[in-house]
Length: 175
Image (cartoon, rainbow, N blue to C red; front, side, top):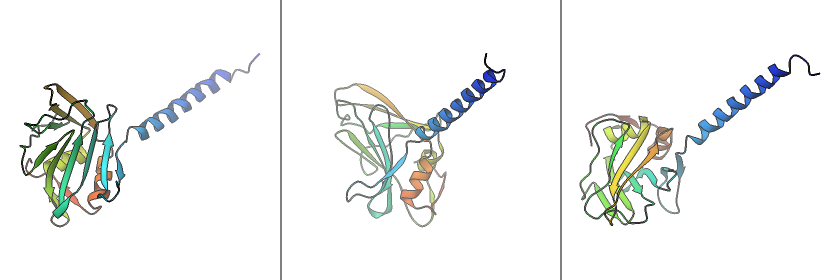
């Protein structure tokens, strides 16, 4: 016959197992990482379950760039840049093709801001650093509509490692 404490030990073991499972789930819920591909600048990036990628990095002339790459079978539509929305906030971020957004194949690249000293006012960058998730909506070359999401968990830490730890990003004007 088992001692009377066996059910208590079993409950304790279950509670500990749940605690460690939750702790490990928290670390996997933080997929932003810093990566330096070849000769390119270091990037703060995330890849979602569908294989889509979002990266933020410094470009030429101290530009802060975001790059969205879709894993959709068809490339992005040639007439517009994907829109994106951070959490349920307004506005829905829409960049016209041109100086601030370019599309090539499966990739869209956005100029979010220009660095000038330690302080930067950018509503978009601030929301990317402090939000919970971002949804990209786009049409591919074959006319199909798509939506994909990225978690923003720990994005701020990764972005500051790439852009400069002493950077003070404030919510300025939208775009």
